Image 1: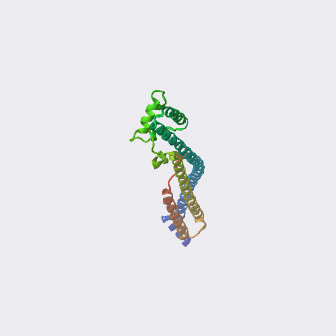
Image 2 (image 1 turned 90 degrees about the vertical axis):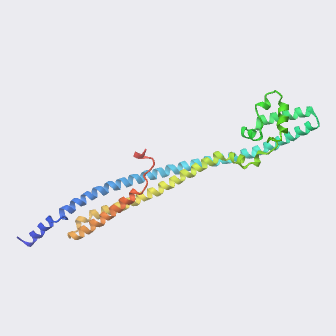
Image 3 (image 1 turned 180 degrees about the vertical axis):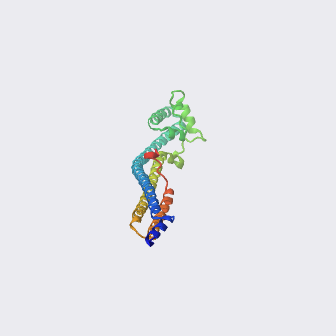
Length: 254
């Protein structure tokens, strides 16, 4: 028996024979191809979610800024309302102090008219003005005088002395802006996750290249070295991919 035939038989008998290496390489090629497709798909979903979240965040930001500007205008308007209202209150108190009933009636009617058109429910509640009871035509003057002279009431106290009252003007705007920021951060996270999946795809591509050149080498040792490097890269990429969060929506993720 020739030396060449003996060597060939020994290679076939060994665990890492040429045929075994070929089978392992083909299996790894298939697994790597599937993982590459999965990483590419998940990354594309993240990219789509990123674009969606950025657009949604921009719309929410515009809406929040509009609400904020509206709140500033409403606050300025209500401050002017309070200034006018407080002047009516002073006039009524003065007319009542000098026992000028006609003037009291006149000022009360002006107050009622002004409050009916300009006083918001929140502001009315803050100063204790009862829009229903004080304008029902039943003892309105006496009720308003009692309201103004109540030492425990808030008729003469500016509601704008309260930070909480002022903050209420901006509540909706700030909620929308907070939501916009949260959506933006989610978009940024999608962007980061998409980049990570892209990196994984690149590593898988390297693995595919290494597996593809295994058969080029004639020396078994060289084949095993390249195969071992490809396996290490494949396992490392797989472990890294498993640490990346999957998309929260889109595609098969709902």
